[in-house]
Picture 1 (cartoon, one colour):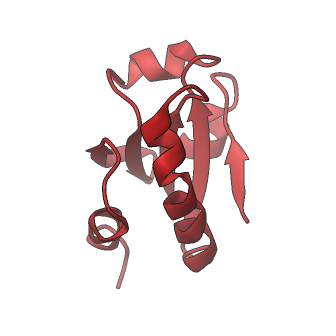
Picture 2: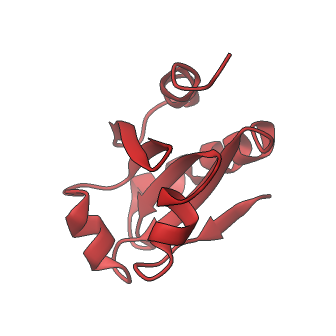
Length: 108
């Protein structure tokens, strides 16, 4: 599995400066829906490891980044390309929904 935890301090380096597309999972340990989609996020990390970097941000431990990106409910999945947020999916959604959102931003 290729998912790393990103913090307020490392977000810029790991996400904004990444040369890959980045899927960011904003979550918290107490969040039931976050735990529901965790296996889906893990599977996407494995299936797309060559083209997408997948990271997690614990919103309880990293409130600055969560506030900066207007995270009001979790789970929130954001997709960044070249340092810019290009899309977001809020809530525990089916794998197909996440994949379709991701695929429309990947270079063919």
